[in-house]
Image (cartoon, rainbow, N blue to C red; front, side, top):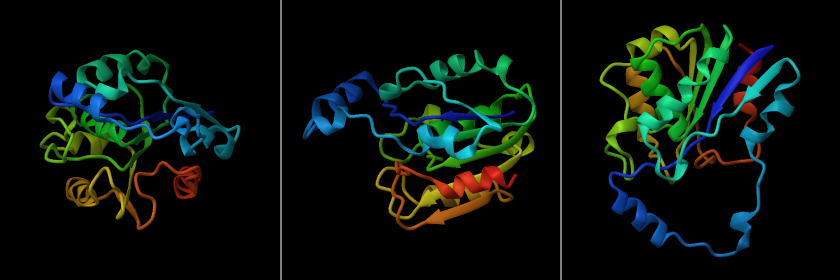
Length: 199
């Protein structure tokens, strides 16, 4: 059975005061915010089929993420990953995988790495240096298997220009751009599913 490890997104702030300001200023318009909405990540086990085992670790404090905490937690699961694992990162999860795979040797063979709407540089509003891509992604290119990049022109969270930075650093990656997916919080993601099935 092929393992698919999916890392969710989150927020990271340059200081605790910035985090508190975010919480203070955050507006909740109605109780719909509290209702669970199934999205493509939650539907992956169903749409991929029984040949895939989808694993979705909850990373520490996604509201105020720290790279060192995510690294420590992620490494607890490495012992259980099989050769041929598929890694999927969305938003901050993509940024985390980018830095982690560029700076650390992965203990098993990675079949493919899927980076969805990831931030590359720290000059994006709300992005901290600790989740930014390092100077070289050579190790990610060597050990990340087949690499896929997804971004949408209308993303209100991560500028579309970040995709270009990934493409320069990972020239052999397969890039898929969209015009209407915003930050990829939709219910289905058929292109990613097809890319996994076609590996």
